[in-house]
Length: 205
Ligand code: GRF
Image (cartoon, rainbow, N blue to C red):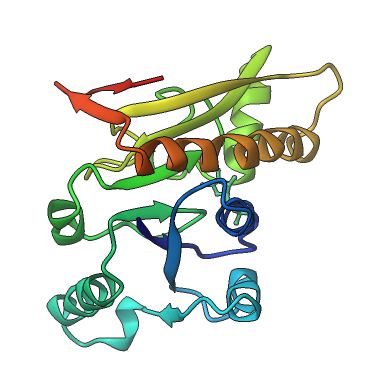
């Protein structure tokens, strides 16, 4: 299976996935990293590991269609089977979602459908969880649909909120769980064990 990863930032999830691939825990390759951010930390890590990187930004194209065409071309050239969003801060164009229907996944640092939607990213999520007085938060891996954070949920894992947590301590604990969960979901996908029926996900053991 060939995975294209989209990331915009430090790329710790990308690293965790690449580690699982390199350790042969997942039978897959990562022939492409796409980013919109030339300063993203994930670029250096990808380059060190021989993963081709493409910086694709809407602002570098006068026409939206050309931007979309460029994304689709890179994805096709990489023979992409699965698109993995790992801290990608831009909306995926509808044309890409149509072409890769139920083959684009994202990880969210809370238990969707709570604490999701536009603006719910990074520390905003953890602040909202703490403000709500939640005792439990977690991680969600889901298919990506046109509406933010609303696609079929593939897997969730709870993380306790501890007394005295602040957004940073909570984020760090949630991130550790992300690193454990995401590659396992990708492995299930690579084994063809994830099925979507009526917008609900079923996973074979
Ligand atoms: C993670 O918290 C993930 O849940 C969210 O964006 C963050 C990316 O972190 N979608 P990293 O770049 O993988 O370290």
